[in-house]
Length: 345
Ligand code: TYM
Image (cartoon, rainbow, N blue to C red; front, side, top):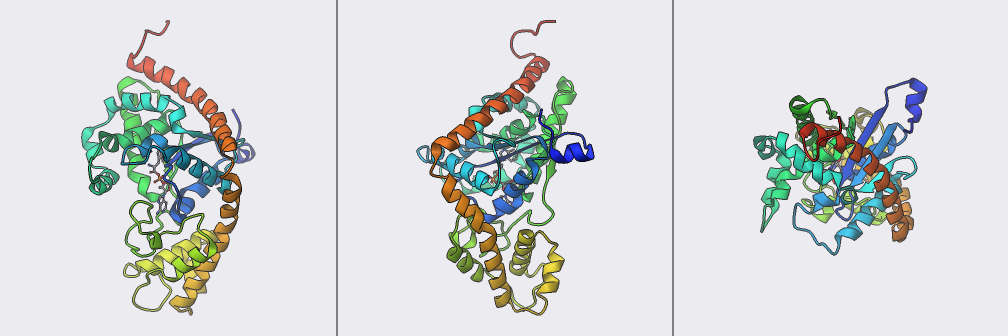
């Protein structure tokens, strides 16, 4: 197994990292700051770092089957453009590794129905469905648990909206181990201190989200400079004029958080620097810096996205490595649960 660079220098115990991202077409600034750039940070630290484009999760709500394979390529190109390197991490399409669906079913035996009922994301997403609230949407967190537990990962880099799902997968792993023996690892989330919940620019009391936000409220990672500047300049700000975070200033607080994340500094530093600025000047500064920050990713995305054969090859290479790890776990899970033919003594 590969050793992360940091680990060999500081002799930290090996850490296995896993995260998943949905192939929902375009990705936004929240995905990038909250999650994708943490994936990149983890790829040399992880032993290994494993990232999945979770196409099976995409079927839990109404979706377009003809578009889904393209969305997988969009998201693959997006994470590669952000800096993932298929030779330094494992990047694969979830449905290429059948162990995820098998483990999902087996984990249902140690998942409490009541816990699934309490999931915020289930409540929010089921309220958005017009025709069918599928059982898949209800079981979504169990499949997510299977994603991580199949690799016995220690660390899961995610944005703040995934906190409850990670807590649930810890409970599932612990309940499994208590019932069947010590087979699975209860993982920890890794949520960034700054930028864990980027908010909608037009409705800053709710998170930026491709499904819930209007286009004006979202910055897409592949938006061109003009679009980014326009959206940030017209971001909703609050009454008052001071560039300072407070509960009654969610719009300004969000822009402070965005700039702090982009510069990788503390929000206090942004408040100090802009203490004499007006909202308008501050918004222009945020717009320019966000546009500069995303420009190289957009450019690289434009280069990578057209070559679908190369994207597919990267995913296949990743699936092979992922399968090796997940199938090992499944031998232990099946054995512990008494599934399949008895194991030779
Ligand atoms: P998804 O595809 O919705 O989002 C991908 C990642 O982006 C983060 N994120 C945000 N971070 C900050 N601000 C925001 N406004 C924002 N919106 C989204 C999410 O927290 C996530 O980390 N259920 C997961 C996918 C998944 C998964 C997994 C994650 C499937 N299996 C296993 C971790 C481990 C999801 O829907 O992510």
